[in-house]
Length: 373
Ligand SMILES: Cc1ncc(COP(=O)(O)O)c(C=O)c1O
Figure (tube, rainbow, N blue to C red):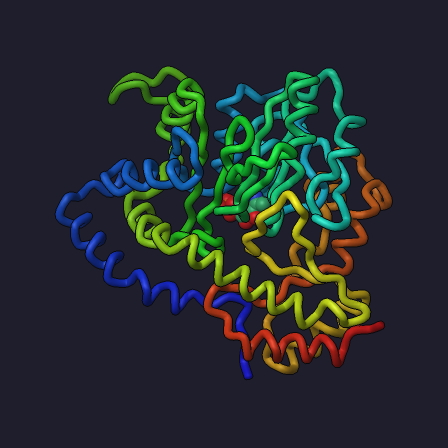
């Protein structure tokens, strides 16, 4: 039995007719750049995120980079980033000329440990960049409270969190991306909402920031021939937007299938000694971009998976403070013990909407038979 980590064929079948019709129309219109499907998608995705505006850009990394720029973050500034996330969360900060300042993570949610953020705030701190890792929201109430107190901006890295929800202590729910100053998404093909290539978006409620982002993604252009700021070429292709429009209609259903799959994994693994399953906090609606477990004998388990044709991945084996690219920041092993421990034990199991229950059972059987107690 071969079980892939991700299989998008079923999703592609569902949207095929829509996509081919859009491609046909697009070829008639010739509006490949900044075309109709892009503007329609931006309206629809802003609506999905319960935000006023959305700006499509060419990747999740650029969504973060341009988002930070739109908040005037640059050289001399510091931005607080979790030590355990995808490298792009920090690279985007570095691209602006600002410095990423790492903070350890919580060992249950794997998100930034809000209790440890305060001690890393300095005179130079301009922003906090929480990541809704794996599709589980960060503890946003605490982060927003700190931001208010210290006058900081908050940028949500929602690259893995299309449709994730967060519940405030008063009981009101907000959707990822609309909780803080800006929300940044990736549409990399493997994401819960993925294009057929690179793509990303920023969602925002401020009209001023929205206008800045429109310029930043399009050469700093105010009108056809007037360039008023240092802008970039970072537009979401109309074609990708057309594909995303077709997929967006199904996103809630696909997220609910992911949640069902996660439920079965957790049911089958919860009693297995030696396995730590992901927990959904009381304040969270998890969308399981990644279903990650922790075990002590990861290498051995991965070898057994490979023997049985099961694909699994590690998100992520090296925390950011130990990445060579950040050597100059002066961190060392032991600085963020939780991030380091999790990086050494975490395994991402196959997860996608159309994964079959029988496949999940086979994966769980392999885990049960091979995990070290
Ligand atoms: C948490 C996180 N942030 C940022 C990114 C960057 O997105 P992209 O690959 O679209 O540039 C990713 C994508 O993998 C991610 O997982």
